[in-house]
Image 1 (cartoon, helix red, strand yellow):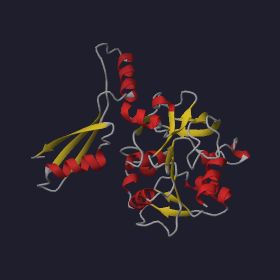
Image 2: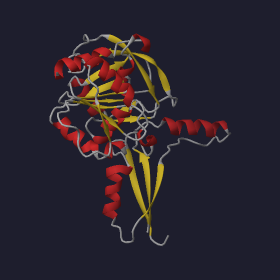
Image 3: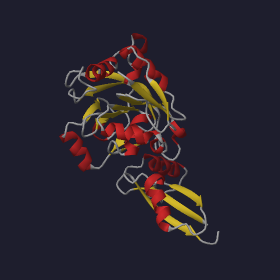
Image 4: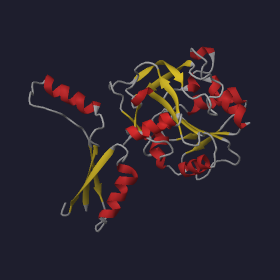
Length: 79
Length: 221
């Protein structure tokens, strides 16, 4: 089974990379961009039946730095 | 002093740190591979060097912090063994939780590589005993992810408890409160982004880093 983990910066944490992307979009002529924040997508190919709690543990232990990042797990049951 | 320098795949300042330790203490440190389960017997100082452990993949220092050897390092730190984490080493220490906060991408986004003026904020620690309180020194920096961040409560606590060891005098990387290096609550673990091991001999362009290691030797030996 596959799962996707989205790792994003916590609200309030400054994101200079997101800002740089924002400026670049504006430079390309996109005027309606209010803010940009960049995160990570980690795709996991896991043994069938892997528990949500185990994926969450992976996130807390390694995939996200919970000091500054949040994570969201998406299971792709039939992928 | 029986030093150990931890080496991860991608560490590249381990030899600089080893040279500095040998020059100042007269003894070659043990170079300890990250996969080892234990530190050599009788180690009384541990250095976690700079570099790009694991290529900075996922997050700088994230995977190095989960290496087998770090369990032994954490246990030794808990026993009071002095530990220094320089640059990538500082990142590793925050990732293990031995130090609070996190090191993020430099605020201006560029890799900063130059000598920077620092203020010694805490001259009481075993790492900074040879400096005067408030002394201005120069260490070189070379990093892309040196922006120290923590929540306000943590920052206030660090300041209040005198655990800010070094502070940048100029804007370098966007670090909160200009924090360049911090101590743990027991005062035996120091993490800093600048490189004291690269300011040991005149050929380095400055020798302000020598006294950090001399202070350690004085206390530990």
